[in-house]
Length: 401
Ligand SMILES: *Cc1c(COP(=O)(O)O)cnc(C)c1O
Image 1: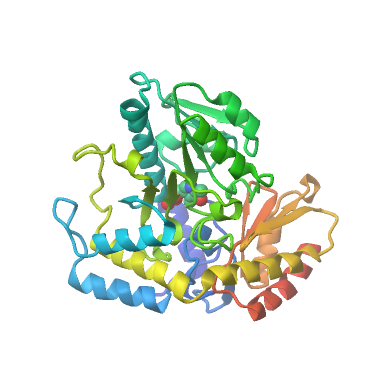
Image 2: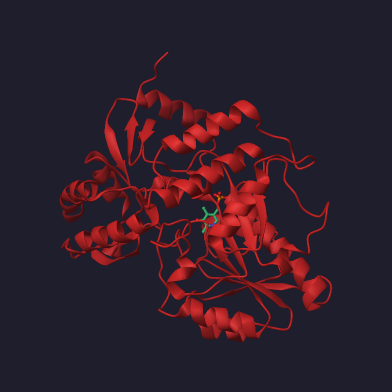
């Protein structure tokens, strides 16, 4: 039975929780930078599933790795070992210069896992009194949707109605290293921050921010936890966004593109001291580190490097940004970006970015507004100059209208 687009909408509306407000486009196929709806209309994907398909839709090599592994072995649980986990550890550590890895599934789980590990480190290594550990986070952060995480969100939509929340978090402004230094106490165990705030609307901190943050955390024996779930794996034109500032986090969280969009895979990457505190039975996940996830992640990392996607993101990001910055519209407040993480922010008078997203959709580009007034442009890292030239031809009239 084939359903019409309006049938899909009606069933979703009736049977699904309404926790998203998607564009009303029903997609049924994807290839590289393109997706097609059920009517056969083609779109350039400028969201990349919130940067989970950096490698492009249905990348053939990741697909092959997934199918081959799915035929052999998918899940053992961590009660037994599997022949993919060690290889994944080795390859991800070599690539990111890490010493230890904790594999999980969703991004939120990686964040939760880092919080647990850093708290335990605080008690066992730093000597923080029992149940007194504090973690500093930033205003307008986005780290996921679990109760633990939304408890330290400052977005009313994300948190209101979901309390009570766990204590132990201090919120400071993003991009303000003096606020960080002032907020640290002897019980502070970690500072959790996004190198660029993605969901807040691609908010890029002042130059040198992470360098200063790194120095402050080191001086106070506070673990720097960088949430690179969105900024990592090539999105900003570097493997990890921390490289723009030449720093290394103590814990780095990756997810999303770690599977090229095939499967939920995330990981906490850390120095030995912090993940070293976790002992058998103290943390885990049935699916975390399963052989299918590991095989998919290995292929996803391999193609990022082999196909030069990271350098391409840097070059094409600069080209795309320059093209967007030529668009004249008094309602545009700012156009900014790093690599292929780009935002066009409108003034309030524009009455929201959603209508521009609808216009872009008509023109064959899929984009999503974030925080009412901003459109994010984050196509797969495989995008080529011709695609961008075509995109700019569509975007210009849509954004000027
Ligand atoms: C998407 C995202 C998360 C959460 O990842 P999920 O897989 O949706 O749980 C956490 N942090 C950042 C920065 C993200 O962009």
